[in-house]
Image (cartoon, rainbow, N blue to C red; front, side):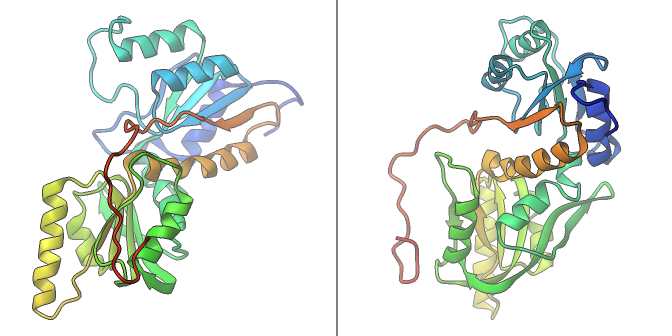
Length: 293
């Protein structure tokens, strides 16, 4: 950008860059994206990126001197009737306003962007060439493609786990560890509404998050029933966790912003893990031949 060397960008300039990358009109109709707090004329010297605008993330922004927090999930997705500090959202809004920290959210418009959340999860799964998993309100949602080299379900799980940020829940798998897989469908965040699209795509495995008991069990039961009739028993499932599957988008976003903003602006990824889970007791990995230790 043609800013004077050392001069801070204005918030409106950063918003323009973000909206060029993630046009607001590509967000789903129910979503609430864009600038949630801040004065478009305020200077921006430091930007903090996170998945969620939690109180701890905002506190990190304040302590590190960030002028703008960019998150994936909106702070005010549903209507609120009070921003008193007796509620978490009220405390978050107050902390932002009192400390002159702006907040910008790119949610489903980042999900459908290229590059965006879907491409980041696809790349972490080892996919190179992909196409849309489905269309939602005219926008491409999720990705599907073939791995350059076939692997096993356990092998894919290991590859993806190595790319994900550490989380308490790790990565859950449903299917034989040594099952061969090549075609992979991915959808960052909660994805158990897309099983019909996954089946139509012919994917061997579906990588997503927040898989609820009944939709996941029914999907595996349908696959097993199809296998009894001569089918493959797919799709298998990998649940990467909501926060972890979408965190993968942040490094790419940082690189995009660094290239598009003046050198006077520092862009950093939050060190706060906003996954709500803290620990797991009693998880048992599979020990089948070819499975993970």
